[in-house]
Amino acid sequence: MPRLWLFLPLLGFAVLAVLLFRGLSLDPTDIPSALVDQPMPAFESTLLGSGQRVTQEEFTGKPRLLNVWGTWCPTCIAEHPYLMDLAASGVIISGLNYKDEDELALSWLARLGDPYDMVIKDPEGDIGLNLGVYGAPETYVIDASGIIRYRHVGEVNSRVWNGALGQTYRALAAP
Amino acid sequence: MRVFLACLLLWSSNAALGVVETYEFSDPNYELRYHQLVDELRCPKCQNQTISDSDAPIAKDLRRRLYEELEAGASDQEIVQGMVLRYGEFVRYKPAKTGVTLWLWLAPWFFLALGLIAWGVMARRKTATERPLSTRAREISALLEDSE
Image 1: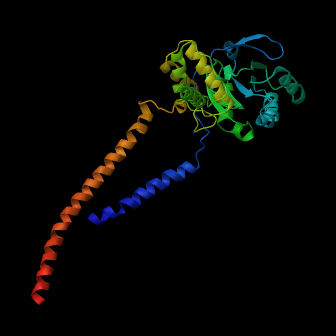
Image 2 (image 1 turned 45 degrees about the horizontal axis):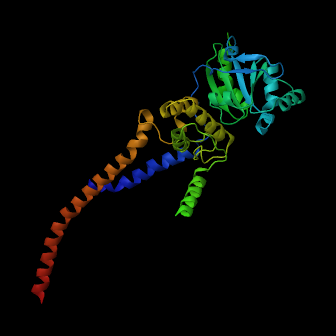
Image 3 (image 1 turned 60 degrees about the vertical axis):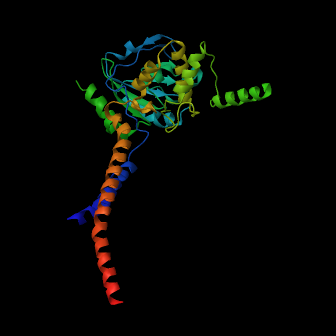
């Protein structure tokens, strides 16, 4: 019977191996958003182009995506055509022009197309900071009462849209 | 002595300027707390660096926000709590001693206790097994003496 104790190190090894193996497939950049199920943080800014005043109250009425982008961000170029497709299929996407310059952003939209119903200016990154943005692109799903329901960090593409991001939006958009 | 002091001051200010930008604080106490907090908050972009270590733009923004909130008179707890609300428990290098993160604080003591218990058990077993061995050794030595 005391011989069974000899297997204790083996058991310990097995437990450690399982834990470490699990760790291999974890994505360390996948930080859970603290703002999921929280209302959109209060802000006051202006819209790109029109210069119209805008606050968080603009985010009520219909479920939508909020896409954080900047012309300095290479992945934003990569996901742009897919956002154009989504907008064409009726998905409402608002843009947050994160730490960018107006002229650059406007010429980018003129050149590549504008999938956004409005683009909020955030030149200093203050709105982004309150949202918990740590790198563009990020895309949030916001429901009709202005509550953040999901956050995706990185490129939006068909795989992501068929996954949790799209599912969350479709569940909200379905009547 | 004066030269030595000047050198010391130069050196210490260098150490404090790990990051590029400097802020003018209206109260030296704010500055002290600023330097404490930049080493307690973790950069969300370049993980495993504090916001004082990191050159990432987001770390710079967080330092600026920290400065603004200190100047606005927020307490350390309010500032850290605000960061946690935005970025989650992740941003703290000193995790809270509640909830899931309590395990982080307890685990080392748990494993230390486990090790001490295992050590104790093994030490006791060793002394327990030594006695029969020594009686046997006495028998053998007695046999050896007999054969001489």
